[in-house]
Image (cartoon, rainbow, N blue to C red; front, side, top):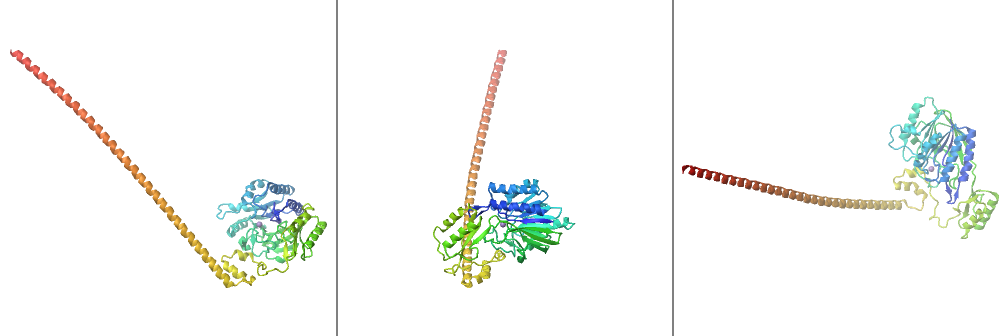
Length: 494
Ligand SMILES: [Mn+2]
């Protein structure tokens, strides 16, 4: 299996707060197309940081879309796999994934959920006739088990012993971070063992200097052969910061079989604008006039490039120094560009206050949960500091933090207590209202019952009266009848 490995495009980057770089990216893309045509790789891998920002502009997205569609049309047999880096919006890339899939381009934005279940591994496996690619984007935290489960699934499938390539966008322990300031997104580093076992080549992105982990001495070799497994940063196509003075390359990786040899070649990228530090001979400017003259000279000799100055910190600079420089450069139509961060050389006025910046192992920093341990490890770089004093300060800070936490907890408890009281009062009010309602209901019920009883009694009384009247009438009738009978009898007797 043969792959082209690149990463960290940072499309849409605005460098030195001033210059957009789409022409530089297009210049790189032309070279990449040529290499894809000439090398006939089975796959082109782009290991994260496609864009420089989470929401790239429409024109930046167009550069991306136009290029990869045309590349696919030019090299239809080549598989293209693109993963998201920490600069990218994982979900935004993922949202377009299905459309890219129609063109056979694998775009993987979102990393697997920590508690992913079911057949999730398949989303990250690209099966080629010649081998397997695990397309893992930028993922936070330790993922060993997940990655191993993917590799195990491939191993179960891979009876022919085809090579396995895994992509990832992360900082790996033991890397050379030359040219990266500490704003590379994350300081988290992982040991290569965190990627599991069962791959032959780990195609890394995130660090811009091309390098094979564990083989720093080989960084500039055009061709080298290792035994599987190998972890490598292809590096970025363009210099992304001015400290990246090394050459930038694309890696061509050839793998013969699972567990076999890994041959790596580097293709040197021609950058549209090279990076220069003035003076070119490595010395420093002693004054502003010298620097201005050198910039003029540079512009006469170089049609384009990025420049940065190295100056003696004691050299006086007129207040419009930077403006003078931009005026000279504007005559080049922005082809010569300026990084205004001057490298200061020479003795410092007060060396104890502006001592050289300390150096840290990224891994050491990351794994440092106890700040005091970190101080103990780097105290040697601060001869003016007294370790005991620092320790006392840390104890004081820790106590202060604890005190603040206690206060916070106390005020939270107080708030909870108040909330409970309010709740209770509300419940009591509600109960009282309910009792009141109940009492009124009962009174109404009683009243109605009384009314009904009265009505009933009234009816009864009327009935009794009617009955009595009827009885009285009957008695009167009977008396009349009896009287009549009596008088009839008297008449007969007469
Ligand atoms: Mn990155």
